[in-house]
Length: 132
Image 1 (cartoon, one colour):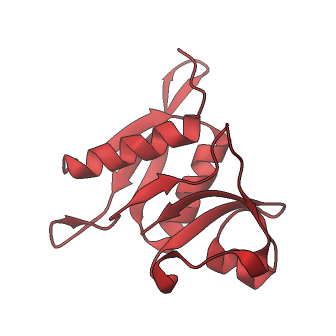
Image 2 (cartoon, rainbow, N blue to C red):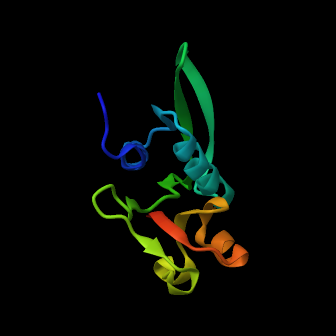
Image 3 (cartoon, rainbow, N blue to C red):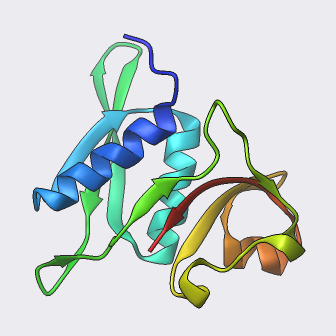
């Protein structure tokens, strides 16, 4: 089965798993998904992730979700730039998510970065998702 928005699918799996209070969830593996998860891990929104090989040539990512006092750390997570409407932002025009309490994940020429890392590197790019 082909997906038109694989990153959106992974974000929905994370959202659904946290609402159901699961400790972990799985998604098909790709480099972009792994880079986004690495940015979420650096920002402290997930506990971690690991690559698992299902069979030869087919891998999946196991995402360890994070909870604080029984409540999910991720309150909301949604896709900004979709296949039908790409959203790009200059670094000076990048809005702060909930006045700096949340993060935006960007795909930049220097890799997938959070908005704070992109501001420090002074690079803009495609706004992939917002997390609070």
